[in-house]
Length: 109
Image (cartoon, rainbow, N blue to C red):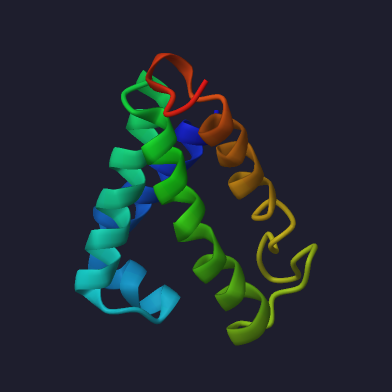
């Protein structure tokens, strides 16, 4: 499920990168990079292809998004005009589970 969430988020970044970059206050190139990374990382987690590395990359993407929602956009925990950031802390935790128990390509046993 966590992979599907990131694939969908990445698709939203790549579908209309100019509009999306304006809405998140980032450059168009960064938005394309972020969308591509989310799709590839999400697909890797879903398919089980080096899931630990994919999960680690997705964990690294989340603090920036959560920081912007809380401190830059001043979005409340439950939202207001938007959906808030109440689900954002769960995504790195779910990826942490994948990272520590990553299937057939685990780094340690």
